[in-house]
Image (cartoon, rainbow, N blue to C red; front, side, top):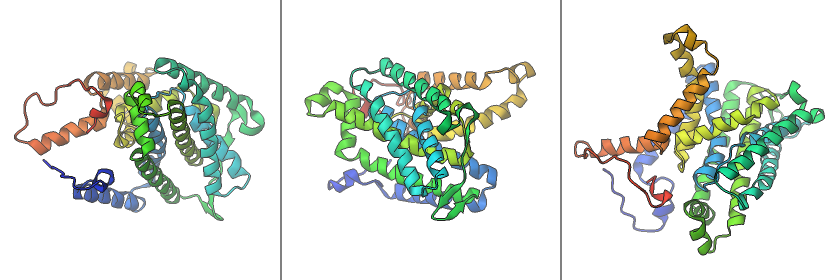
Amino acid sequence: MRFIFKTDYDQDIRLAKHGGHVFWYGLLAVFLLAAPWWLDEYWLAQLTFVLIYSVVGLGLMLLAGFTGLFSIGHAAFLGVGAYTEAVLSGLGWPLPLSLAAAAGLSAAVGAVVGLPALRVKGIYLGIATLAFGFIVEEGLARWESVTGGNAGKHVGPMDLGGVVIDSEGGFYAVCLAVTVLCTLGVLNLLRSPTGRAFVAIRDSEISAQSMGIHLAYYKTLSFMISAALAGLGGALYAHKLQFISPDQFNVLQSIDLLLMVVIGGLGSIHGAFLGAMFLITMPQLISLGKEFLPDVVAQAPGLQAVVYGLVLIGFVLFEPLGLYGRWLKVRAWLQLFPFYRQGMFKRQKSFQKSDRLK
């Protein structure tokens, strides 16, 4: 088992805690950079979707996992970013400016949605964000002169400085660059005073307020950053599908996004990526499993929703820390083998949420 003895403050905020992190993350970087050359087009497209949903998951993880504010209408921010990118790219805006505008407009909308968070929390905040999601979906459907209404809107390929990115490999490279920048930005944010204020609000609002943390400011800021990341993911999502319609950003999409971060592991950056991989691979696994089911069950409508619900119930009951929490336990078991104790992984009460993921 690895023990790290810290001798200065720089070690406490260093992204790579030890040489093992450098090795494994370097190996992951090599895999991601080499993916366009050894993966076929289908699997590269699936990996691109994982990157897009990871960007959105980072935003929702920052809001729900690190600030403790749940949103059941996050697909609305995804839709705002997607339609903003569709309109601005159609007007000939450069890609960096259109992506920034999509993130900025989504952040502005997030600031408006964050106002209810100042007075309500818990299930009541979820209801408020759910209502906002319905409003945005209906607005996108009614504003036909801009969004095309229910008929949808076509989105052209990316144009980066006069270079049209219409290949799967080129689009994957752009998504990878955006994902890396967003991940580094969130990691640096979390080790800053702002990120520590988010965690303090999640653990106890009363304690955070007693330490001088301005709850209204930081809650609104968390909503804005989360919405900006969702809008950025929505812009990439629009270019990937090249066609968007209001029904793609309904409440079911919001539930999928929330399911993604809960199953991935709330309160961890790794959980956003693990949840995105789960969200992309689960439909394929269900399709493969239908071959072994009776025709009555395999052809039944709503099978995917039932499977998602059962998986969510299983994680809530048996592994509330999600996939990343399970990995932490497996890693500890491997590091302590053969000296592990029989009941060392039994659930124990944590007095603070910060103690749950170490």
